[in-house]
Length: 204
Image (tube, rainbow, N blue to C red; front, side):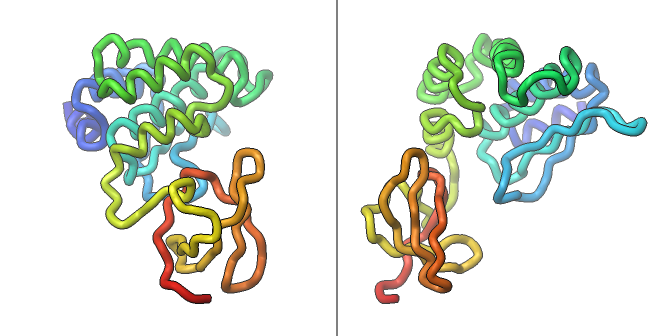
């Protein structure tokens, strides 16, 4: 019950008992981590006598936390089935992600828009769940960040800052990412459209 109580503080209450059972069944070390800018969650397979390890960022909204958790457990199940013989987000992983998402779909854990985005993703999972823009965009609606905007919402040439304080000018979109000029060092960087930014003061 203690495990369920802790999990219910980070994900929808109805999902916590299922995840708690998975943690016990797979004998998985599950860690709620501090925010990591490079990833939402992580899976590490057993190594040198250690068991499965999963970590998920603590700053995710409840629905994003649950989707990320299922994402990582799908990696665990795929490793159990195939070890390192298949691609990280290949067909095997996608099938497992779909299977492991079923209990939460059946329980109507998600609000309608997230439910629909997940169903659409599962019908045609062309990317890892965490990099599917439609699903990620829908999940981000439930973030509580104040003053943050998604880069895709800003017009080209808008000045913005990121969490470390660096200032950028938004450029054109190149395929999946925006090319932006860093005003502090003159270098060009590629940004995910869903990157969270704040408007910068006018001027250079």
